[in-house]
Image (spheres, rainbow, N blue to C red):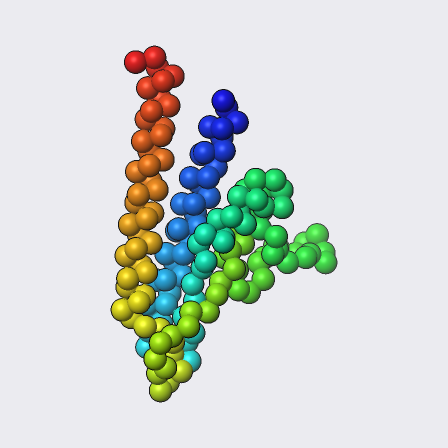
Length: 141
């Protein structure tokens, strides 16, 4: 019983963390809409979630793309093209090219931003409902 509960909570934690990181990537795209030669990035959410849940240290382990340290005094870091959770950042293909080389499509970015925000809120609501149900069961009401 406790294993299933732990797995469900880990799933919600991982999904919300990935949604939050994707929101940062989308916000960065919107902020750089007028930057010449900026290439829009995005995260394949379902692939990143599967990778995070079946991580290298069992379920939900640390990212596999961590840079190797050559000295114990070096700080850890991630290689370019990954988020903090290890999700791979992909370049977004654009339907219409810009003269300045920027690939940000503001309509698409706004839609993705709003969709991701709504899914994040739904995830928070669902996790909150599960925790309230668990609390009710523990209290015996």
